[in-house]
Image (tube, rainbow, N blue to C red; front, side):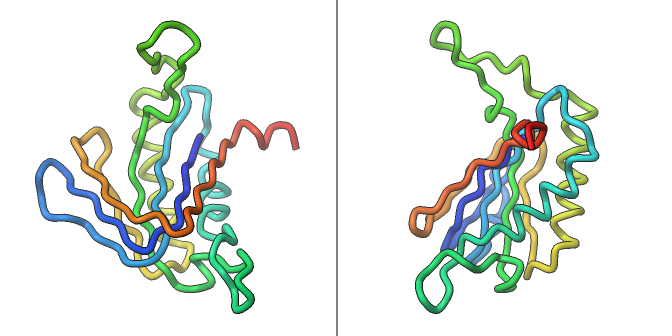
Length: 152
């Protein structure tokens, strides 16, 4: 799985033209699932996202987490995180997981994020047309790829 985690001062997602789902300070997480991923990876990924120390402490060092500070998260599924640009100008999305794995992993990730003690966890809808607006604070953007964990 890949997660793009952004520290934000605020963010919202509009799903299929509906009302905005808005958070204040916290995290925006774009989540992509690879065709070879397993659901066993999800709890650890959620814990690492919520516990990622990317918020400033009293000395201005990135030493505090959204979980510790009681902040919010906005999670949006994003299969394009597995777009390959090796050939040509049109990305290939062959490595992106298909249903049911992609949906199961996304829904499990949402449940696991809700267990992390954040203020709230809002989200988009898998496969929907969404518009995401955010103010990246810092900017701070982290890419997590669970494939890297295999080499630990």
